[in-house]
Image 1 (cartoon, rainbow, N blue to C red):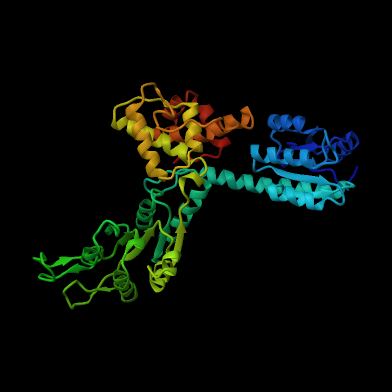
Image 2: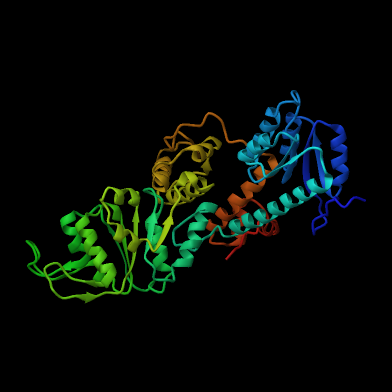
Length: 461
């Protein structure tokens, strides 16, 4: 038996492999070489996509020279493109002629994992496929870990998106320290929630958290608001008043919209960060204060520095650690998750009993660009709860345009898996982790729910 024959998994389950090649001789050769795999073969793009939908193999080899024109790579490249559109995590290995490496690089640019040139050497191709499968398994383990961390202990922050879970992990890691943190993100992405999480997960949690929106306070009052003032310092200063920084001694001060501040204020804030003392407006006494500073802005501070509207020395003081918060449109699956969360809240607040979202509304939630981010989503769901006349929310209730076509699903098994991963944590969240009530809410038995929890690696506190 050839050394190239692939091994079974540790559970003695054969790995799925799809081979796309119109040469029946090569099909037979690779079937024999990969007898440790569960091999399917396809001779053209249509058959390949049908088999891929039915079986969802993690690894696919694609000969770029497919009918109806085997001399052109177009059909093969289209096959690669469609497979990766259906399941981007798939590892696609493209097979080309000896002089077609430039075409293979086009496939790599489209997202293919690797390429191999004919004539086929079974040993080499087996190594490539085994390595591709190994990488897929590692990435799948990481995806399972991400799914198991859906309920992130960051206060009111709700997310299941890998992009946002990375941010949450960073917040958890840096919260116990005293570094100055700069939160960057569009309006409505949850900067204050993350700032509060930095405070709540820190040793300062028992002390004050003071949030100041620098854009909402007139420039001539901002210094007084932050540093305080003495009696008679200006017209209307009838008594001594401590500033927000002094009042938050031992705690955290969150300066939102720091990019809106004037150069004069920036100088005074820089001095505080350097010396950690405040001097009230109209006073001479220097008061030592121990606070952690967290800042946020939706502006490009480097661009402001280039136009001398933000001090470079202050930027480097504030940016000991920078956390970039992704917009909602870049947070995989969060629009739908947050929408259900808001629906549950507004159902209760407005004494409604809406059962969820229509298929068209869910598609709209997925495709809308959300320029106003989470805040826009919250407002639209609130409006929908008030306006809805049916028992499910429609795109019209959300005041959104229904997409031209619904998002494509790979196959029924994949759709069911995704629905289970999405709905089980939601049900558990609504009943505070009570297994019996969650099973009833989902319409399944307790043993079935336990099986699904193990299958999807969902942890219950």
